[in-house]
Length: 214
Image (cartoon, rainbow, N blue to C red; front, side, top):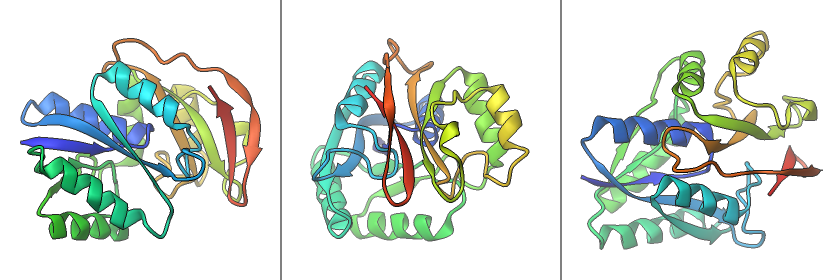
């Protein structure tokens, strides 16, 4: 079956993609990245569209980047998926772990489009998932944190065993399924070459601290 993968550039979508490809049952033809129509950045991750594009190029899967505002998100996503259906795509891969309301929304949208959703990480232990991500060899850094959940000092932290050991001692979900932090994956077993990144200060909005990376 031809599938697309819902794409943010972070660890959960990467692990979901990795697992799906390793099953050798489906062909991932596209990554779908929804970004802010005004800034061309992802809303929660704060990543530029160019960074996501470089990531996809290294992985070797075509990426579709669609600008949208919050109000038009579902409409624009459906348009992208319908275009993929015309190319033979029959399903989508999503990195959701345990947020039932979000899964219900995905299943409704996919159902209306007659697309099959796949959830490779669903209801698995988030500590084990983060450990799997690290042990598999992916390289990622924290690029945004919720102000009311984590201090900005967490920005830039590498996802490694030291981080896992520290996050386990907090009340933060290890995989940040509730949006406590977000990541950018820049190297690992799916990459043909690393995406070299540099940091350039910190910015914020009402909800998040963001690490400026190029």
